Image (tube, rainbow, N blue to C red; front, side, top):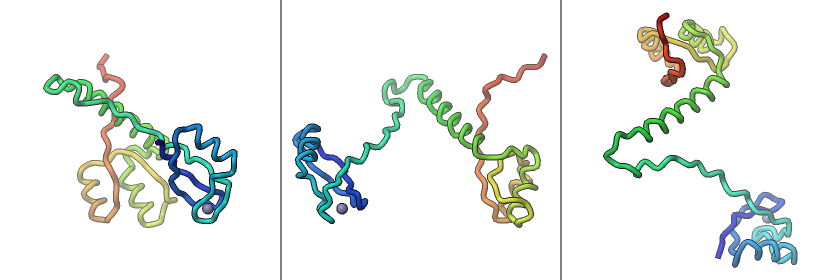
Length: 144
Ligand SMILES: [Zn+2]
């Protein structure tokens, strides 16, 4: 047996049980598939959700943990890239800009930047929420 998540043209969702994948197509072709809520014959399969694969961490327990560390770095990189794409870099002016946005002086938008711990304390006091993410060190900084 195989179970599919189905929906009709009225956006009702329900489960359908079938012998196999082909049974769904056959039953649909023959008009045997109907929505249990409204009786519509326009029934479709909900595409299965994208599965996020994480690297198995149990593979080598007790080892150097390099794999999970790399996986973590990869995740952080992805987060950073998303943040980068969706925020405006205000650099050192982060705290000031956050305050301006908070008080409606500046246009509301997502910003990223750098803040000193003093500034962070001040922002927290003002009730401004922010998150800190580690910036991946892609370029190894070298002194020439
Ligand atoms: Zn329906």
